[in-house]
Length: 301
Length: 276
Image (cartoon, rainbow over all chains, first blue to last red; front, top):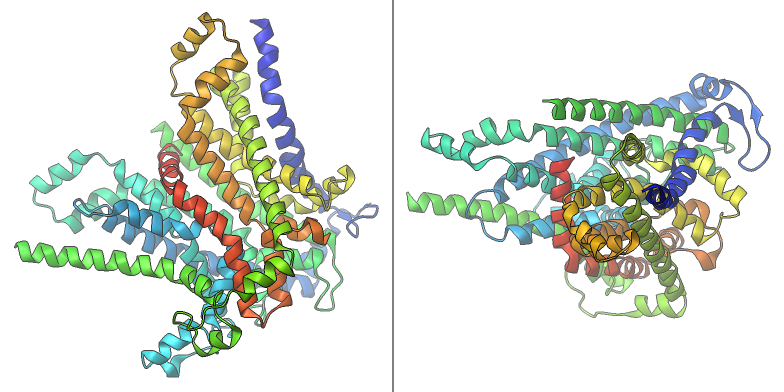
């Protein structure tokens, strides 16, 4: 028996080493990096909270930080509304008894989730193209030519346009999760409701919806974490400068630009970059902690 | 009455079909655009190509060395998926069979990493890879992908291994098998669907990733396919045919994998959603 203890330790070791060295260590030590000043490769100097003072005190950084934070909140709200509403409707429809082709619809709706974010961004950039994009082209055909826009070039529409592309790609995830949640609802509940004469719509709002609320909560956390660490979709569609006029600048692009970008007359500053990453860590950490607490309460019930 | 039901059903099918078209359209647009010359992309943005061309694809493989980038991506994705599978199976086996406080701790220790994106530790990761000599190396990418996907892979596999009755292993032990043999010859064959799910789940996002290559890979010969596609977009901004040929080439492997594995993928995810 003692031999198997060592054997088990040997089984755990490879995963433990890889995970600790390449995941836990970078995540934890990056928090500490925000207290140092350095140029990326050279020696580091301890500067205390100077990086944070710069981030929140220097208007060049603070205006961008709060702008990016605001855009990120908007981006999250837009994505979650679009995704959840669409996914819920589709799941409810596919879940109707006697609807055929459920598996085909399921596969089709999930397909975009498997594409690269960068690819999705480029395809939608073509769709939104003001001159030969299919959106403006279709608007002409429908007689809506007067409302045509350069969707990604306009400060008012650019972020929403990106959120639509993002929601297009990821609606499949909540859709599949809602379906799983709906399948887990005991059939007797619907039978009882049917005997009482409740309509399908009423059954949906009184039985299905309350029972899949936990799923909706989990999805919100996943989308929150994804959106507050997003980078690629914006990078693909409007670049890392947050164009037009910082209207699509989110924390991910701001972080990238601060660390690696040398445009806009600002030299890259790894220390401030680390401070931004720490703030993102805190924002995401709060959401994840809420999730843990909530799922613990669920399992206690 | 019957007629009313039929109309309702027709509306439901109509909505589901319209949304199917909405999901398919951008993908189809990508593929047909890759067969259109630049002039036609501008003149005929929506329709099928009138004079389909394959010039874009030819350029990619003959002049732009796409075969090499394709091989790089395949190498990174396959090696990462295999390492992930092996180390996670070993880990999940111990967590689900060796029931002590240590294994409970390990479970939550690994699970904690499931929700925090590794990219937040990017700057330290940069430092670490630099010190280990793994910067600008495909192995650096492989270690990153393995580390960040261990929690999820462990989570799925643990769930499945726990469902296998211990008595099945005991029979094998009586027949003289050792733990290693029991694991690979008894347990793994029984959880094949879960194994397939996790492999696809890991392979696809690793193939698709562009974030880490963009930051850590600078030598041209070591670029991944998605990274090249991304750099292409900036470089050939006006050559839509070439860019969309590149996008199509980069997506085809994933779409093929998906066609064969969508069932595993979706059902695995549904099982995970109920458990989580």
